[in-house]
Image (cartoon, rainbow, N blue to C red):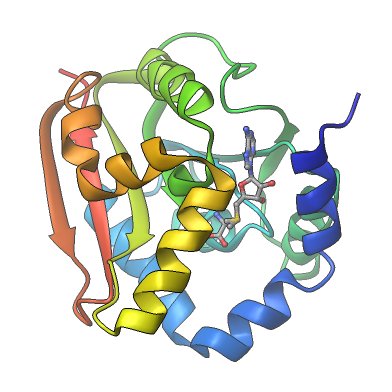
Length: 211
Ligand SMILES: C[S@@+](CC[C@H](N)C(=O)[O-])C[C@H]1O[C@@H](n2cnc3c(N)ncnc32)[C@H](O)[C@@H]1O
């Protein structure tokens, strides 16, 4: 049965790309490239993009991979995945899509070199996020990297209010705690956890390795 959340994202998929384009113009593509550059992903490797939405990171990874290796994208929203699939096929890019919840990934252990997640970790419920982090570790090879990207807390008080509101409505107070200290939680699952701001300082990547 579809949960309210899945219905919400299915509905949102109808205008997600338009909102991103309005909001960030080509910054969005630059950010996704920054995320992939930091992940160290290269042709021949296996990459999993979770909560892929309309596929921004997965498509960028597939174009970097140049047909070598494998890019897989997961989302639990059928609407989001159909958009991502249509974009991949119109650009001639090879991406494997899977409809699944991040808390239960349909993959064997130690398959991927890289797991990416852009702008979704703050939207997961705390219990789902904890299970998902365990799943990311499980499907990563030893030496693999999990890397997430999120907006940094804005400085303007009004925008900061909206930012916190979004985090709390999608999750709870617990999500705000996570947003203030992702490194603490990631350290329970990964080694060498680091945080780096993007060049604009408006977003950040947080990543950790599976030793
Ligand atoms: C804000 S969008 C981000 C999309 C994309 N990563 C990007 O950067 O544009 C969040 C995505 O997470 C997906 N999502 C949320 N909870 C999920 C879950 N439990 N399992 C799988 N996907 C989920 C939603 O369907 C949505 O596509």
